[in-house]
Every structure is written in C-alpha cells, then in structure tokens.
Image 1 (cartoon, rainbow, N blue to C red):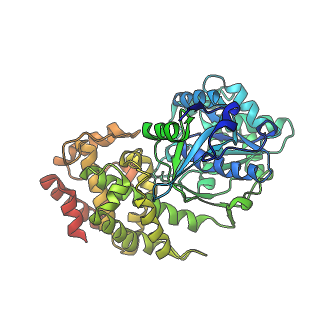
Image 2: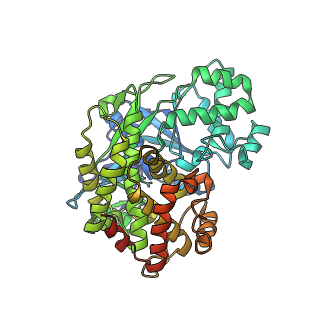
Length: 491
Ligand code: CS2
C-alpha cells in the first residue's frame, strides 16, 4: 500500500478505512490550553473536542510542554500540522484509526515562556486543562501539603517573570488577565487524583499566597477548579502500532496513540468562563464527582497496580497476560470485592458488580497490550492514592488488608531485586527509584525499612496489624521468591 505522511495536504488521499476530520481546521479558535500532551490527553480530551467539532463547533487546543522531554511531541506534531491518529483497538482485533484535528498548536514553555503566558492570557482562552500526572502536583504525599522545597518553586517565588512549573505559568497568566480586566480561565485537572480540582486549587493557592498575596485573593474568588473523573486505558505507543498504521492503512504517523474503545469523563459543572457543550458528546456533568473518582481510582487504578506489581515479579509482560492467568484474575477480583468495594459508598447510577465485571473485560482486551512497566512506572506517586489509602481505611474499620498488603511486600521485593522471578531485569521508572531501592535493600537487616518511608506510607510501620501481615509475607517472599505461591495462599 502507498504510504503518505500525515499532514493537512494528504488528508483527502487516505483510504476510507481511516476517518479524517471533515471540518475546516483553518476556522478553529484555540479555547483550551493544555499542559501535558501525552497519550492519555490525545485519547481523551482532544478526542472529545474533535467529536464536538464534528458536530459543528470550531474549538481547538494549544498544547504546552513544560519539560525537556516534551520536545519530541512538539517536533512530531509540528511536522504533521498537529494531526495524529487515534487507533481504537477492540478485543476482537478490529482497529478503528481516526485522525484527530482538535490540537492546533503546540508551544514549549522551557525554551521561551512568553508565548505560553501570552496564549494562556489570551481572551479566547477559556480553560487551562492539565494532565501533569500524580507527581506533577508537587505535594507531599503523606501530609498533602505543597512542597516548597522544590528548587524550581523557590526560583519562581523569587522570579515571577520567569516561570518553570505549572504553578509559575498559571500565576503569570492569571496575573496578566487580571491586570488586563479579562475574566479568569477555568483550571481543569484531568489527572488520577481524588478531588483533582480541589487539589489543583489548594496547591496553586499555597504557591500564590507566598508569591503574590494580592493575586491569591483574586484567584480564590475568580478561578473555578472542577473535579473530574477521567477514564480511558491508553498504553504506550509501540513501533508495531506505527508499522500497522503505515502498512495496513497507508498513514505515516510518527506518533499515533492507541487506546481501548471505552471512554468516560464525569465532571462538575463549575466553569469560570463558559465551557463547550461537552454533554453533547457523552460527557456526564454531576454536582459531586467525589464518589465516581473514588470508585475509579480504588478499583481501576488500584486494580492495575495490583496486577502490575505482582505481574512484573512473576514475569508477565502485559495486563492482559496477567488476566489470562486465572490465579491473577481471581486475586484481582478478591481484592476488588473484599478490600476496595467495602470502602466505597453507594454511587448514583452505578452497579458496582457490573463495573467490576467490565473492568476485568477491559483489562483482558488482548490488543491493548498495556505493559506492566507502564503501570508500575511512578508507583511512588500512584500507590499512596490508589492503594495505600485503601489499606489505611480498612485498618480503621477492621476490614481485610491481606490482598493489598501483599502488593506492598511485592513492591519492596521488586524495588530491592530489580529483576523478575526468571532473573530478567525489570524496567523501573520512578522519580523515587533510588530511595525505594536503598530502603528495600535494608529489608534483610530491618524488615520494616521499606514501609518506614513515611512520605509514602504515613504511619503504617507503626500499625501492629499491618506490620504483622506485611512482615510475614515479606519473609516468605524473600525465602522462596515465589509470588504465585503467596497469592494462592491468600485465596
Ligand atoms: C493506570 C492509568 O497509570 C496507571 O497506573 O492505572 O494510566 C489508567 O490506565 C488510566 O487511568 C485509565 O483511565
């Protein structure tokens, strides 16, 4: 098949099996500035906006990169007129490729902050949305307070005109809007954090109160921070995906995104400066997102971590490989039923049994091939929110903790050994990797060393019930190194 580079000019020449934007992209106005254009954003918010444009809107996104690593996506998107292909992969093998046209520009904040501030401060910008990951919010995971020790934050506090982090940029832009008499934009967090909007608000206000108290008062009054629950499994793009797109569909896209068919976004209807009619494309607006967020984080995300860490140790490469292993599927279901479900209250419009059934089906999708290394990456930012919080709640109520505790023991062993049970090196990506390894290494002389990382575990190392359960499992694991045996024993 002839291969064509993905760009505006070639859109008309792709085969019918590839959906392309039919709307006029030259008319699009950038109403949303998005920080953190990773695969998830391109499979989720940018997808929804593309759907709205198909219905007649003309709204675009300006992507922002605040990290050196973002220069890759910047270059790819520039070369492709900001177009990219979303490859929706069904469990039966069907792939639906669709070219998404809603991202219309990209700016790198590290090389030149001014155009980024100007774009955020532009009258057309109504929303600044974020997917900066759990770690990007700059809070202490145990206390939940803003981390003022971060050197970049210290720099921005002294030099408001030279922003580096999301907080510096948001404040510089909001100050400019206030001074120009423009309304504030909405700050819309799309990260996997419970009360993500409240968290963004708390962190921004902590920062700006020190940087510019006067501006803090204006932000507290004018800026809305809706909480939201976002969901779509988006694995890391592989070379095989790029090749399939080129060979089977003739589209040469340097960085397509693959995802599952399922998509969900539940959001609070609190916007400072208007919003697109997202309800027309399936977004659910509710007065309180809390119960939906908690359900998703403590079932889906925690479930991923359970499979990811146990699976990595055993040597399963992907989440679907874990689910194909009956022991892993049963273990996951037992964790969901016995430890996660009891801490969730009833959720309007949701049948939790159906929700859990659908999670297992989604995880089993054999075409997604979501790597356990993606799931285990940045566990230090994820686990306190996804799993450790559940252990704390079950300890308080007398609930079961054994399934989650084994995951913590496995995490210690994994951080110490850094190889799976077959001796294959594990790909560990974590901002705290060094600290985790050092603490885990001490386990042989001090079994509590790992859980004494208070930043992650709070007071768990002083809880008798947890310590007994954890140290028994850890001993077994270090003695035999057989994770499946331990899993089996708990069922
Ligand atoms: C995953 C999430 O990062 C993780 O560990 O659980 O990326 C998950 O795939 C998404 O939140 C799905 O919506």
